[in-house]
Amino acid sequence: MNDPESNNSSSRNFSDEVAPDKAFDAKSFLKQVSRQAGVYQMYGSDGKILYVGKAKNLKSRLSSYFQSSGLAPKTRALVSRIQHVEVTVTPTEAEALLLEQNLIKHQRPPFNILLRDDKSYPYIMFTSGDEFPRLAMHRGVKRKGVSYFGPFPNVGAVKSSLSFLQKTFRLRQCEDSVFQNRTRPCLQFQINRCTAPCVGYIDEETYREDIRHAEMFLLGKSQALVTELADLMEAASNELNFEKAAEYRDQISALKRVQAQQIVESGTADVDVVALHQQGELVCVHVLYIRQGRILGSKSHYPKGQMMGTESELLEAFLGQFYLQSVERDFPKAVLLSHEVASVDVLAEAIQQQSGRQITFQNSYRGQRQQWMQLAASAAKENLQAKLASKQNTLQRFEALQDALGLESMPERLECFDISHSHGELTVASCVVFDTNGPLKSDYRRFNIEGITGGDDYAAMEQALHRRYTRLQKGEGVLPDILLIDGGKGQLNRAEEVLAGLAVTGVLIVGVAKGTTRKAGFETLILPKGEGEMTLASDSPALHLIQHIRDESHRFAITGHKQRRDKKRRTSRLEDIPGIGAKRRRELLRHFGGLQGVQKASVGDLAKVPLISKKMAEDIYSALNTE
Image (cartoon, rainbow, N blue to C red; front, side, top):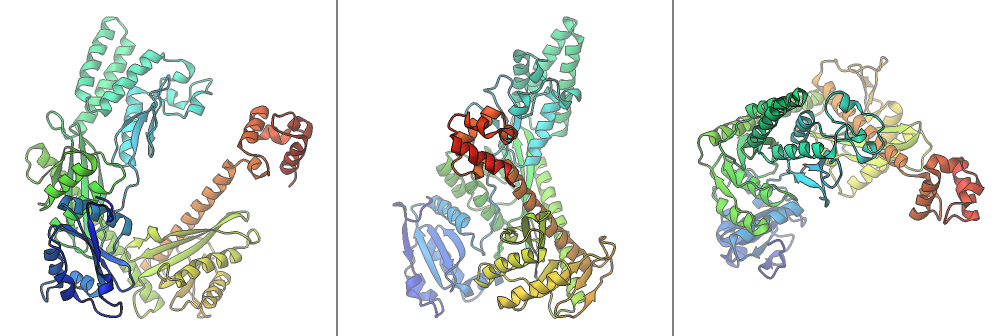
């Protein structure tokens, strides 16, 4: 149930019953609400979504929001902003849950608990269609002729597994272009991490056997693999092939070391262990992934939202998004929960409707499963405490900045701009944003600077600021309290002119200039409107905050510039010549062996290439040999 317009649901919009300039008439609204299962969407006076929820009984659930007393402060804050409510009735509560999660994913309401969506999960793949299959990490669309194992919870888990497989089974990870053009073994062979199939040091049958053993490990058949390797070791020893026997011995030792590092349940177990810990306004949900009785990996999530609830309610909101919103999901057979959740039966039914998988949710367990839960709960608590400590440290830095600049109130949002280019070419400006929680990466922006004299940083800064604050003035974002400019008085004056021209007020502009030694800790703060300069102590928390955001803007600008530069380098100069399409480029590159050969060719040589006329050859020669 993903579409509000589906035949299986009916939708009613109550927005016309209340004029935008009047308070929401909850009493009249509730008289008309159905008692069936469904989804409700709450909107503010600006027409923007505030909250999405689902209910087994819509009338009962919505009535609870409009009680005269007993509401939590954040629920009261939500109710005070409601201007109208839309209701969608669904046949079952499970379909209501599916619709709710679909709406949350696409509308991102501020009062809902929001979980960052993993667009794709990493896999380990074998290019099984190749003579000597390649071992590698993969994200995105799956291809035919390739074997995939996973998905893994994160890239770290994949890299750890790849490293083990490479050390133990010595499989190639190089790209096909490298593999097909080797004339001698590479460094991976020298350090005993590859058997060098590229130069024929191993035959296909033996290599395929190594691939099969690696697949057994990835499928969780480690014990069967150890037994098989032990038999092979014994056979090699009986044949007096002691070198091969030693290889099998080393593989067995490596497998046993991995087994010793894992908490393994007797038999096999495919479970997710989900533990939640809440402290103040912050929540951490730690997920431990167990596959084939082996800990595959783990990941901590920090859901955000303006309306928190009890730990059970938070866990319920997390589970819905975690199992129903992801693009790809490796569903376990069971999910162990740290807290009791009332609607797990509805969630299990929704998962079965969406994916056809049957999952059980448990909050009663013992033995090894209890140990897994203790691990997950401990990780959730420790990670949350570390994040909380980091948040408190950031808050102290903001307070120190308030004191240093003599502000009446603590700034809550900072923006910093920086410029990056290579000798004036491909200029990129960065804008990074910090709030009292630290870097706000969702609000970062980059600007490709065009139409200026190369190397004119003033003009680049002016263009970036103008583009950024024109959008903010149009309501496309939030104005910062402080704008930091990485530069001296000239950059600061140009920034003041831009903001004045756009009628932007209430933003304090501060220049951050490097000191005479150009070393960290000696920065000079240049204040606006000719108020002078300021130097903070090297151990000042305010200076540390400024250095952090300045360095982050520098990193973000350089990264953007490198990406733009690399993209240009990957683009053939032939693409800029009118009339030279993909077919003619391919013929040219094939005939001359590459762009260098095309550049060295004469007009006569170019005209000999199929599909290239004399006039076109002259155009190509002129384009490639004229600055």
